Image (tube, rainbow, N blue to C red; front, side, top):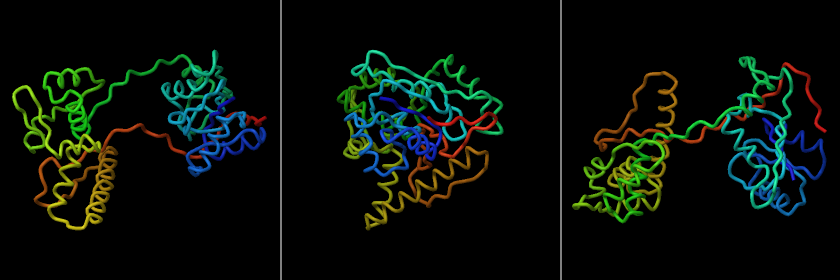
Length: 291
């Protein structure tokens, strides 16, 4: 069975329709029912292969013996070494195959953007020879507070064990313990960290300190739960837009209600950045027919 990676949803259908009825398109634009149907047919062997974008790069476990790269981009942006290796790693799963094959169909002279001076065959060599970058995430206050309460539950509040777990984590975390003590979310009793009921809610529902303080503030002033949810969603959207503006070099200030607790300026969480799903097409080389 084969997984074919290409750079746009439209091309998924073009390729799948061209090579036969036992191939199907699979991407984020399908409904959940359509995706489950493709997954079921592939697992049962009713499909020879699927043609997909980044939807299969991470998430769905399709055991395939072969991966074919029809394109080395997602939209108009080139794949990174990490993304390429993630996709190529779909070939030859340990519990299913002894050998996995990866085929790269690099088109000489092809590019996906006028701004790019790199051709597809040059990018193929760069990806094949490239090394994975070291993963070292930087956790902001919100994420660090989530980690702290989760780790405190694991080590049953033992402060020394908590420090050891924190030191063993990949990346860097913000020192949030004193701030959480200041907000009475946790207390320190000798060598123990005692979680308050609210801190346990943080651990159970993966809520960060800043988000929890917002909820606590709104609960004291708004009676309708629906209004509270709406206000939280509006603030999250506003904060995301503010972060995008700030990252783009614009200067602006967030408007907050007066009397809100300190530390309410919420930083957006870092996440896996998705490449744009634009319908970029190859240019600069003769187009290849799907067979």
